[in-house]
Amino acid sequence: MSTDTLRKSAPASSVTQTAAGALIAAVHTAAARINFTAAIAVTDQGGHLKAFDRADNAPFLTAEVALDKAWTAASFHIPTHRWNDYLANPRVAPLAGHSRLMAVGGGYPTIENGRCIGGLGIAGGSYEQDQ
Image (cartoon, rainbow, N blue to C red; front, side, top):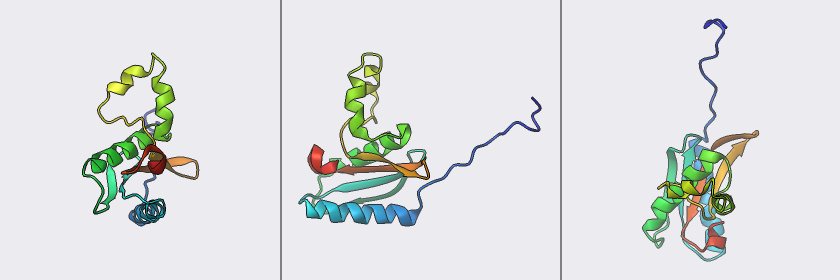
């Protein structure tokens, strides 16, 4: 194969700042409705922070947890709550030692037209509230 025809890059879509802000606003509205305060992180498709907000009364640890949930979701394009089942498999269990992997509810890939464009991480409530 000639290097003239070899594709050297792939297009990568990313969540926009406007969409990230809208996600954060929607989560704060939903969190208030079910009575908890949240930290919300939105990452791009590579897991890099795009937008973040932490409610005044949300514990400070929620900031790091929300970012790691968004990172985990963007990394494998699956919700973070699904990791519990995966980590039960001894062949996958060693990944539990990865410092950023969050195997709890509240992390979701942001999908547009079938492609992952980022991650959303929510922390501050119970497992069910974050999810």
